[in-house]
Image (cartoon, rainbow, N blue to C red; front, side, top):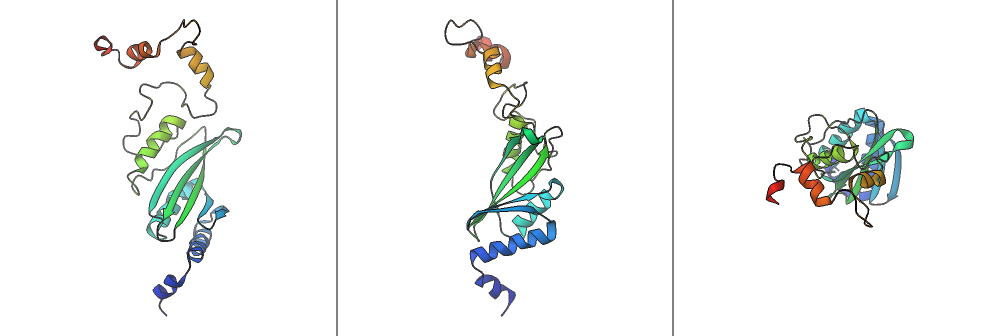
Length: 194
């Protein structure tokens, strides 16, 4: 029986187990957490993350980047980046979790693997301050035009303080009207056309 025939006989859980075992041997990943037969999470060192993700896409058939997001673990001084990959062949999701220092929040880009990663990376730069060197259009505004404050999804960003400083409370409105604020701060050259 050929290797292809043997591979075809593997059930989805067996195929996933083979991939995970290979990752442990080759890359030294850690912290396997299996949620169910269709989803698992692994922790990967920052220096090996792009190699692991590349291996998963090109060798192990995790060809779809479902999403890339971050969790601010302020107590640990880390951001957890979560790369959720999907294999249509195995009908399985594999989350790759990578710790990045909050103070030096930089991670290698994966835009060369999935063009859509460029958008996720722009969002994480804007919302958390995580930098992905070499990622196209990284410093173009994503959603927060003209934003100059601390990135708003960081847990040390004080939403209430920002809102009180920037916009006025409903009763008695004595501060900045949102429309006027946008005219002055974001679009001063166009304000007269509004």
